[in-house]
Amino acid sequence: DQQVKQNSPSLSVQEGRISILNCDYTNSMFDYFLWYKKYPAEGPTFLISISSIKDKNEDGRFTVFLNKSAKHLSLHIVPSQPGDSAVYFCAAPNNYGQNFVFGPGTRLSVLP
Amino acid sequence: DVKVTQSSRYLVKRTGEKVFLECVQDMDHENMFWYRQDPGLGLRLIYFSYDVKMKEKGDIPEGYSVSREKKERFSLILESASTNQTSMYLCASSKILAGSYNEQFFGPGTRLTVL
Image (cartoon, rainbow over all chains, first blue to last red; front, side, top):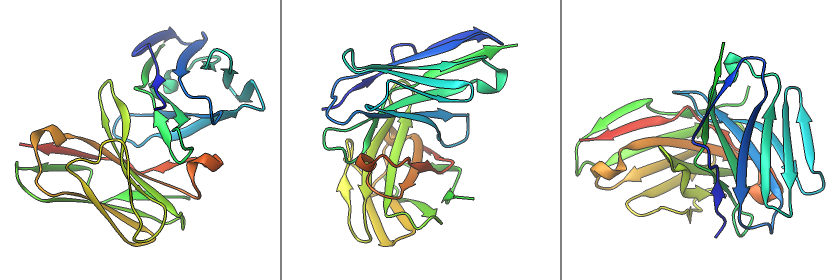
């Protein structure tokens, strides 16, 4: 079964610095991954995606990197802002490509 | 503006009660999902539906059932609520199957407490 791991439950970063959130997965049959962002008392919202035809996808301050051989992806936020403080979930396709399996999340705190 | 709404933001029920959580989407999406979110465990899929009257078990379906009588509405049912079902419940919808790389849109969540 697909497993998605985010080994850092929390991360604190100073405003203006880079935030790097990591994610590891086990099944690479479907190389397409999503990042979601969740504020307290709200549902997750889609942030950025990446597929295996690329090893990098950039959207403004957010960049996701994919290392297929290591089954690892990372989300970079540069520069970090206090409004980025949220829980970030990484998601990978399940074994059948029907749904996404979500990681446990990383709580990012950006300090002013 | 796309929208997924859930009938309650907060709900308190007693052990053994039957609980209905309702979800409505206005995007004409075929797929709908129910997740629960618990600290350290992320979002775990309970059930999903890819069409009216169709349902598939997710990773943790035990103790839950679902109903999809209309395309826009997906209900999660706890037949006999238990304290270990205290959680945040999130509904989501998507246009086509996730394997085709379409994002899921989430509702705001229902925080259910079972006493």
